[in-house]
Image 1 (tube, rainbow, N blue to C red):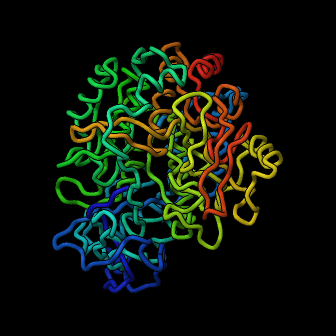
Image 2: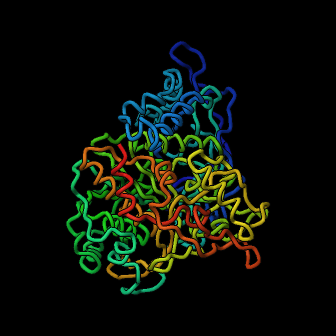
Image 3: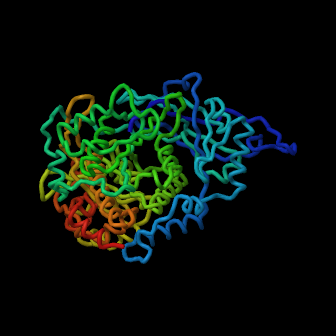
Length: 564
């Protein structure tokens, strides 16, 4: 992920003046007690503070309101039932209004946040029932959050962003707020890069279609079907590059309808990762209306936002008729203590809400094997990836070889979450792995064997020819595997919808109930902490390198068409 002009807050240097309410009492944001909502000790490795934020900067703050424990349990239970292929409720998804009603906070919570914002001259906008945004000058943001926004530069790429290292809210407001963005979260700058200028890379659309039994299948038969890729932080789109890709690599996909959603979709230079995604999803899921949902972190009118969060609440604010039924995303970061549990739990709620609407979410698992994104293993521990290790998304790992049988790609991130326990739908598969891995299993001190195992599936992650800024380059990473898989599941959605069935929605329970519908990958080892400490090894069945294996379209089609 690349960062451009975001925001960072570091400490609280301002004391808010008391603001009297209409009744004459102290309003929210007065001199009362405050609670630190999020704080990090320093910027992540690679980011360096270079000074104050640019003058005149404006920021779109997003207040994600808390969802109560009872509502969260109801969300989780409802999705578990509706996504279980053995359940009588399978595929009976809910409308956006129904889902939003399940998580609507108390009116007092909304009033507390809106009153707090209004008391500082900030105009609140309820983009969903549980997310409130406001656009303010950065000086007002600093006052609201008692935060110090600073400019940071990434050493490896020169990308800049503005963030803070801590922020607080009045106690009576903080009790209703899970987190606010953009604040303390620094995006990982994407490690995906062209390997070489090469138009002859092996994993062309035709090869991938042959490998995964897609053949000449085209979509576009179901009017309700849509799919989309996401792009963040100045990963721009180029229609010229996409046209050239279809012309050179897959002419049959040239008539795929492409739409764009977001801010600053195009820029001075197309992104490698963004063009990879928008070229390969419609190459596999050809003729299915495909969206490029791009959020740069800074809109054309120079308002800074948190792009990943903006994508989430834009999905929540998009009607059932317009929302894509599948997203592929290459966003990710280390699952560390710098991502607080309140943040992760609240983002998980957004993932669950998508699943309940019948929307599938695929995330690339990462490209650092069992290690952290930096390649190290802090405290001699393997590092899971977030959000790939969320129990509510489908994580896509990587394979190599460009032919069957596939081999695990050494960079494929996978392992076990330290935050989330093992879900019921993967308990048998993971238990079998742990009991049969034998001598290939790393020392148990390196990982949490009771955690959610990831990835769930995998696909080719090397040798993808991608057209970027007029040149064809060979690219590698699980960012290749996710849109490739996404296009295949888009075709499966197309077949179901054309037959009058529902979309697939949350995929994992169906996948783990039908492992034989995937191509099991049984060889290869991921990178670990060092030459002497390897990661996990692919074996028969599920493993934390390639998951259940790669998609077999014909086998999966038989499975999903037999479901209600």
